[in-house]
Image (cartoon, rainbow, N blue to C red; front, side, top):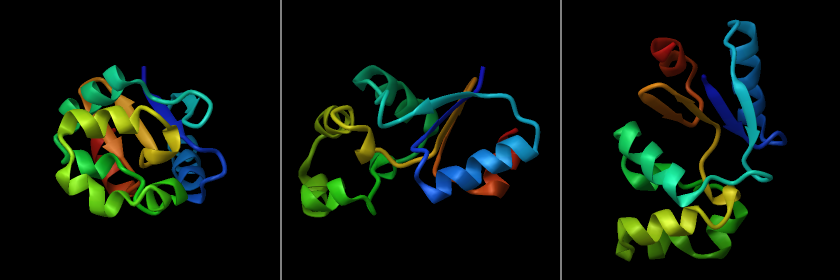
Length: 116
């Protein structure tokens, strides 16, 4: 089963959801603010994605900026970053699209089409 994790008010998430619907992709919807990812989920998604962990941070978000994470992340361990991400869904870059053997972070239509 494919899982689409988003924040419904986010315009990028809305574009991604529209793309999924227009392309007939079946998925389970999960609101990242109401149902934040757990440490275990984030750790597994990070391992599957092949991306640097910093790509999982919503760097344009207000919470990221208010916590001064731009300066703090370079000195943090992966463990510390994963634990921090698990504290609040709004720290996590979205949308996330998770399937069997892949994790897509952010919306890029060409990349999503390639994976599906």
